[in-house]
Image (cartoon, rainbow, N blue to C red; front, side, top):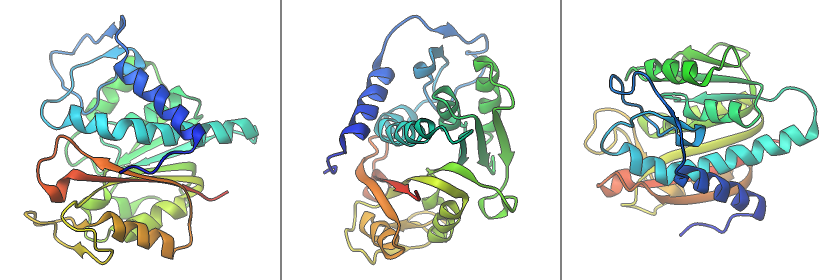
Length: 254
């Protein structure tokens, strides 16, 4: 069951959920028959075809919570009027949350991924359609090879920890890159609620890892980080229990 969100977070989530469901006239993408996209971009009034299979139901599970966290963090920072607000999106795929951050006021957004699955082509297409310039930049890199000195007000670490054999190393890295807020989302196993459950490689894979929500929560608590909100739900596009859980954390450093 989800922990009840604090009122500002709930308002942000409600806004995003309505945006995802809104049906209205949208710009048609000229190459929509040639490329399918990781995400649905209707929140941008942009009509492009989404990839088949797990993508739509999993976005429906993840999108409102991650987006709610992002809007909360952006709102807090923009209200302080302390200068430009920046974001780094790790494991960005098609850079959806970087585009969302820009839409809602971020001044500079870095989207980074190793591009193993070729999603940067989708990101470039969306960037052109949205008319964004240098405010959104792409950085092709393995997670542990990012340039030294990289940092941002908000770091979005979503959709990647379970692909790694050392997820906590990547978690620590993402925390070190954030000056104000860290947003975390990852697949967690529903097969165990043991806080010590961790295995690598992931069941049925030759890479990655699986762990319980309780394992990740305990790791964050042991580090003494300030958890603003924690949530969890199920990824409806994934069938196996070890692939179906999803955990979310909003962490403040301010």
